[in-house]
Image 1: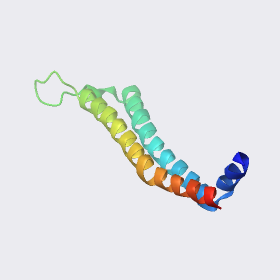
Image 2: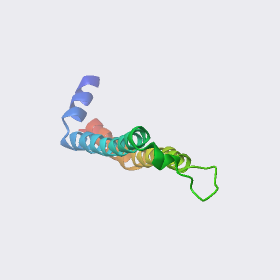
Image 3: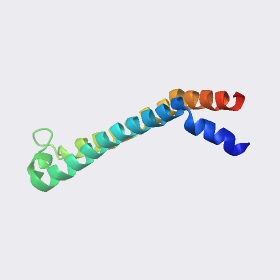
Length: 104
């Protein structure tokens, strides 16, 4: 019985579409985060003077600090976007597929 339900869910085209949609969404967000981090590291490696430039005349704060903070905050925001979508759209669709498979 248990494996019957599992197989119905696994073979359901809506479930396969959901898995693909989740994978694609997660991949896009991951690429954004990786591009941000690697760009920051490459900037440090090949143009450190850009991040070493003060944000204002006579300031002790350089551009490296706000850029680093931006990357951290953006990563948290992108994680929040994924969690929100996963807890609403993806979970609702998943539950609908499970309920449908349990009935039929």
